[in-house]
Image 1 (cartoon, rainbow, N blue to C red):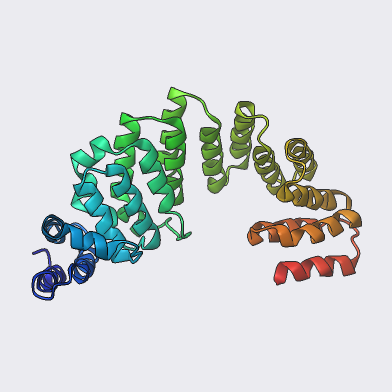
Image 2 (image 1 turned 135 degrees about the horizontal axis):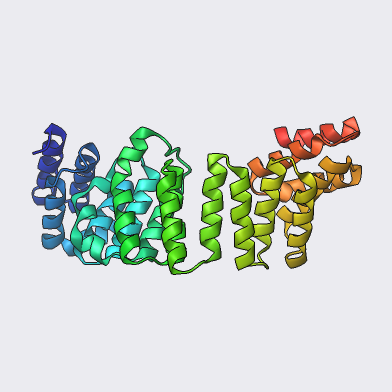
Length: 327
């Protein structure tokens, strides 16, 4: 056995499965053993035996069970059944919930059968699921835990370079501070076909790195590929605002409104950037009215900060906007 925790977990699982008559409880013990030593093969061997001997009972007990142990087991069972896409997406959900455990170090995750069959689309979706909970992944410890994911990305992207999928995959290494891998995926995607999502992914990486001019250039490239996409105008406007060019930001928002005149984020951004430029009380009132409709409170507060720094605004109106930001 790899360590005492693994030995204890596997042993208790055996008792629960064969003497206690509870394969679901056995799965819980085996998941605990995997969490303590993700590379250990023994818990997976025990799960495989359970799946072979008690499949119908396990299916019934795990159906609708959203616990981490149940979902982790389901990922491995999908692998055993040859459903590599389902396996990777399910493990992505587990990893997103608990990235402090190196779930990707599981022996099956580096198995040639898995890496040779999983689709680029499914791996991309799995990468996005690892980011669902917004955990901070830009640390040395996280980069080490996600090393098996980076390996899978490199193997699958080389075998099946689907541009949209590679652009989505690039979000994971970017979140982990592996910027060179993120750019490598974008380059690989561009070599197949230039698509808007790759340009957006590249822009996001430059932005995280603090190179706003390169980010703007990439968003401009994205616009050449999809000139009617209102969100791209907003993305580029936000970069120009971050650079302090509020006149350009306001112009870009107006261009976006030509394609989606009722989009609240565009209308709010336009009001904020015009307020910053001219000190317009009417525009600040518009922003105050729209602010409750903005779901992203961080973005809402940024727009309010920009607007309230406009020239010669009435103090009472600035105070009203500030109250929205602080509530």
